[in-house]
Length: 346
Image (cartoon, rainbow, N blue to C red; front, top):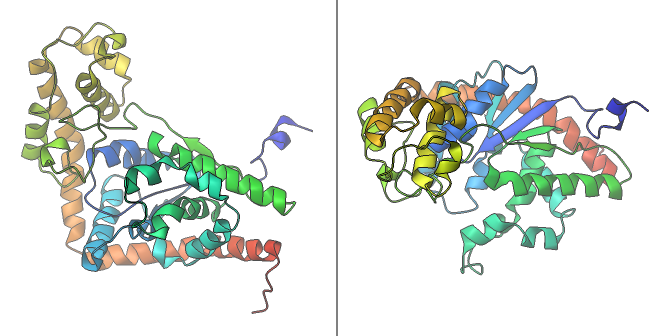
C-alpha cells in the first residue's frame, strides 16, 4: 500500500470549508483571522466554500431585520476582502436546508460527554445554562455538519474554534466506525498566520470583539481612514521601546498584539517586524502601523460601502452560491440517509 493510500483523506477531493457568523460588524480580527486567509486560499488550487452561518447566529436572539442587514454586510465584507464569488462558493447557511438535516443526524452520532467538554458553550452560557437555547448547546454538532456536508478536508479556523474541528473529526470517525464505512473524511484544522487571534486595542489579554462596549477596542472593517489611524494611535501600549528579539514581548501583551497586527497586514513574520523596529518607541511604531492599516483596510471599507448600496446584487450572489453549494451537499446528505438505513423513495 502506498503512503498516499494510507492517508485518511487520500480518497477525497481536497476542499476547504469555513464560515463566519453574521451577528454584527466585521472587525480587523475577522479580516486577519479569517477573510484575508480565505481570499489567499483561492490561489492554492483547492475548491473553497465559504458560508455565512446564520443558523448558528440564532442560537442567541437576533432581531430579524438586523440579521438580514448583518448577513448582507458580512457578504459584502467577504467580497471586499478578496473572496471572489466566481472562484469560491459564497452563500448563507439557511438557504441550504441540508445543513440542518445533517445537523440532526449528527446530533444522534455525537455523544453527550463530547458536548459537555465544549468550552465555548461554557464561556457563552456562563452561569445561566438553564436559560440558554438548546441550539447554543448543540451547535458544535451543526458545525460538524457544515464541514462534513461538503466532504471538506481542510478548515481554516482561529485557535478558539480548533476544539470544534476536533469534535467534527470525532463525529466523522464514529459515523464511519458505526456504519462500517469510510464515507466522511477526517478534516484538518488550518491555523496559520501572524495574527490568527487579534486582541483588543484596549486590553491585550482579551480577544478583539464586536461585542466589546468600547468601539476604541477594535477596528471595524467599515471604519474610514481617520477612524483607523485614530484608534491605532490611541491603542494601549507600555512605556518601553520595542525589544531586540521577539522573546522581549513575552510579558507585554499590548505590544505583542500590535507587532502581530503589523506582521499580518504586511505579510511578514513578527520576527521581521521586530528586526525592523528594534529599539523604536511607540511614537515611531504606531504611525507606521497606522499608515499600513489604512493602506490595507480603507479599500475594503470603501468597497463594502459601495456593495451595500445594492442589496439585491448581494442577495443574487448568495442565492447563486447556495445553489452551487446545494448541488454538492444534497447528494452527500442523501447518501448519508441511505447509509443510516432511511427509506429514500422519492
